[in-house]
Figure 1: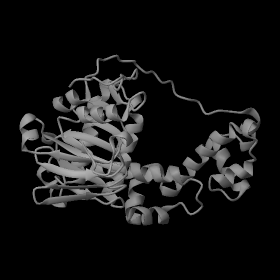
Figure 2 (figure 1 turned 180 degrees about the vertical axis):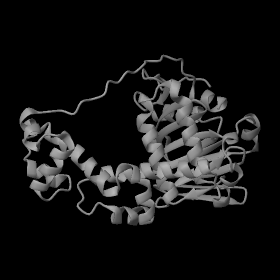
Figure 3 (figure 1 turned 90 degrees about the horizontal axis):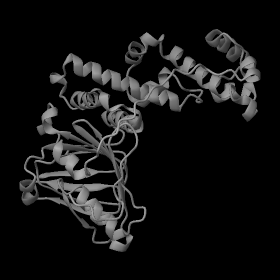
Figure 4 (figure 1 turned 90 degrees about the vertical axis):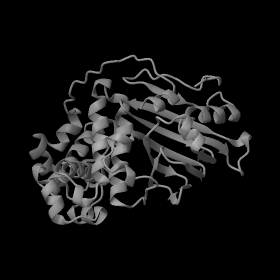
Length: 353
């Protein structure tokens, strides 16, 4: 793939190869041509009938994770077409593309199958098939996975799952967390995280009668991660507990109790996370000048004496001592190895999966 636009691709100095298509210092025409070139192995694009080239914007960042690729992108409305000619040009491209939408809508068709995807949903497309569609102004987190890694690949094409579907929420949480941590993952761990991602997708999209024990464990692990993430986001909520979590995740009390048994139970886990979050705030309270009772309330404790007692049991010091002395939790040593690799162009990545 040729790169004739001004500085549209850059190489990350982090641990892994990264390619970035940036709108900075690029005209709308250059942004459109760069986007078209970057995804040319997969599809051809045209401007939407209602979009003028002077209005076009496109940005994307790509990471290589071994045999899968992950991209975060945003762009103006376009029309897609992957016809028989395009398939013939790249007949060795046999990948599934998972789109997680954070903004915008997509409508497409492949043969007799139709796909309609909206904000928050997940849609799936198979590059072995013709695909025609159009999107609004959108933002996507995209994962490209070779078909031979997926157990039930033939069942996935043109699948679309609503934003509030439990499977959507579990996969979305996994992919968003993976995206946020990719810059810190050493390239030597590529296979660990790519295999975990593929295993999760295989587990989520296996029919119940074909679920193996490993699939069940993968689903439960990812479900547990999603529940933990929700807990972290709602530590200040007084109503946070097993009842609210069961309602949010449409699961039984018995399921949550079983999954959190290694942590001493749901209530115990929530209390520990609240206390840890409060500790971090109090250790900086000499600068923020927050009162202990205010910190306690912010973290779900309405009674200061109960908060102080639990705090001392957990950390061996009083909240007031942390406030006065600025005690900080010990941080583990982190060693990161800077790995420099020559990044290929996005199109080459897609072709090489």
